[in-house]
Image 1 (cartoon, rainbow, N blue to C red):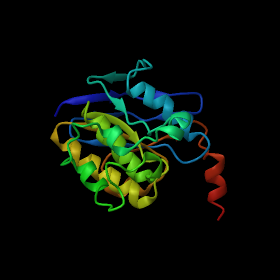
Image 2: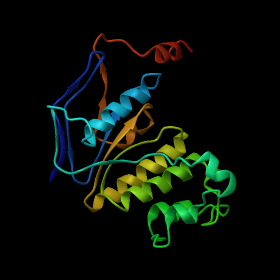
Image 3: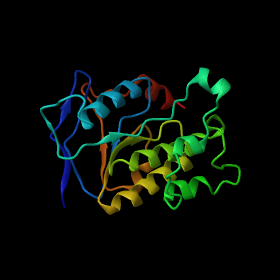
Image 4: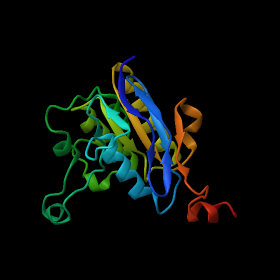
Amino acid sequence: MKIVLENKGIKTETYYIPPFTLYEGEIVVLFLYNGMHFYDTEMYLKDIFCGVIKHENVTINRKMFFVDFFKGSKFRDIFFPSKVNRYLRKDADLTNPFLVKLFEDKYVTRKTKMNKLGGTQRKLLSLYKTFSKTKDIVFDVAGLDSSGALLTFKLVEETIKNGGSAILLDGFEEIKGHTSKFITLEWNDGRLPLQDKINLNF
């Protein structure tokens, strides 16, 4: 199997990402814990894996792209609301599994306004757009419920079997039982984030 990305270990002042190798046709899940630290940690690692930040311990053999969340223009949307049709453009492949799953909802059509879509529906659209230009992605399931997160994971998993690859940056452990490559962030002082310590008390 071809190696898409190799990480020999990423260490910062507060945490350590253990070594892993991402091969063609597989997903690596990086469990970052949930908490106030998550966003900044995710953005930093995303920039490393997508080649925006060079790291001496990370070798990238194929360009990876981050699946960004759809962000509309609040001013423009007042007069010209963004719709699914405009986001997809005319050449959309409606047989794509992401779009098939999206349009299973009878209330979602090509004319549906983007601001009327739920989190999972927006994520499926974003994944479709990203996979239209690349086969190697970095993504998250932030803002999705457990069923939406698992659906998204399974669709990505099926898609990359045809020669792609993916890194999932995740803050919850629901996906752990569905993957053989689950890498956990290690805190340098052995601590848990403040939010996780609080949650453990309940």
